[in-house]
Figure 1 (spheres, rainbow, N blue to C red):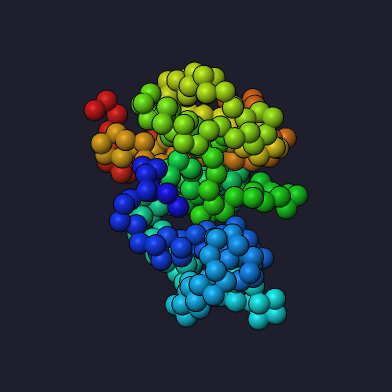
Figure 2: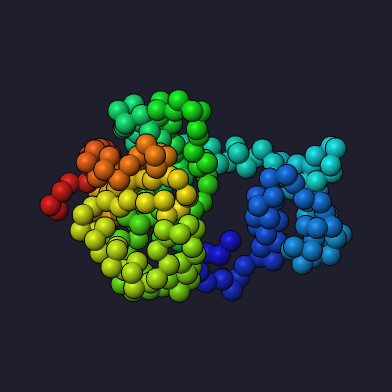
Length: 267
C-alpha cells in the first residue's frame, strides 16, 4: 500500500514491501490463491514467494487450505485488527450513540475514517428493520471510494481546494453506479453544498438500491476525523424519508459524538 502522502519512501525495506503486496493480493482473493499464481501477481520467483509464505504462515499472518493448498489471510491479522479497533477512542466513545441511532431508525449505522484516500468502516450496527433478511454488504475493515459514499463526501467536503485537487489526481472518480458523480467540477460544487448543509446523501451512488445519509464527526480542534451514516435499501429509505427524518437523526448523533470528543460549536 502506498503511504498516505502517496510518495514511496527512499528507505523502504524490499522484503516488507513484498510481504505487503502478498497480503494485499490474498485479501483480494477470499477463496485463496496458489503459489504459482501469487508469484506471477507479485512478479517474484516461485521459490522466493514460497519462502515468504512459509515465514508468514509460521507467524500466523497467512494460512494454507489443506484441501486446495491455496493460501489465505491468517487469523493473526484478525487479532491485530481487533487490537487496533479497541485502541480507537473514537469507536469506544461512539458505540452507545450508534446503537441508539440504530434502535431509533431501525436501519444500518456505519462509522468510517478516511485512510489513504478511501473510507474505511470501523464500526457497524445493524437495525431491526429487516423483514426480508436483507443485510448490507458492508463490513468492518471494508474500504470504499470516498467520492461515491455519503460518509466519504462529508469528509472530502472539509478538504482544502489544494488537498481536493491532489485527491482527484491520485484517485480519479471511478463510476460505481449510474448515479456516481464522475465529473471533477461537478463534485467540487457538490462538496461545497455538502459542507454548507453539514450532511451528504448517497443517492444510490456507491451501490445500486442503497441510499445513505451521512454527517461528519469533529474532534476537539474542530477537525472532521470521522463520519457516520444511516443506510438502507432505497425502497425503504426514500428521498423524502432521508430529507425529512434521517438527516436530522444522523446530524444530531454526529454532533453528540463530536461533543463527547471535546468539540464545541462556535470555537
